[in-house]
Length: 99
Image 1 (tube, rainbow, N blue to C red):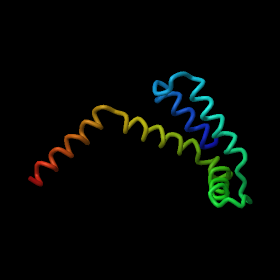
Image 2: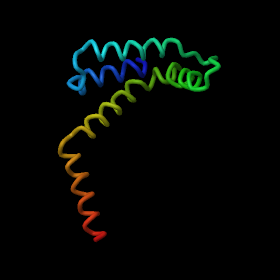
Image 3: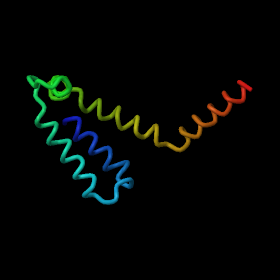
Image 4: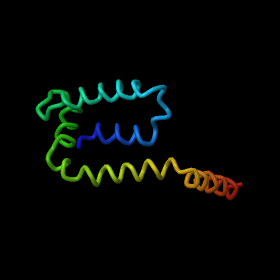
């Protein structure tokens, strides 16, 4: 599984409500998938070369299920209302301590 497909799955599952319709999300991710396919390790563009060497390697293919699980956990963690409220409360307490 490549990085772009992982992100598309996460967005479809967790953030699809932020898009006007499914076609908007598909259009964005189709452009990203075309870019992903065009990246080569031998590219003269440093970012594309770096991206291809890391995310199009066999090693990334082996760890991609673990990486996807980690990304999904992070997305769930930072969109959880209770967690976000605890961050706000901590910030308020820290601000009150400074006064």
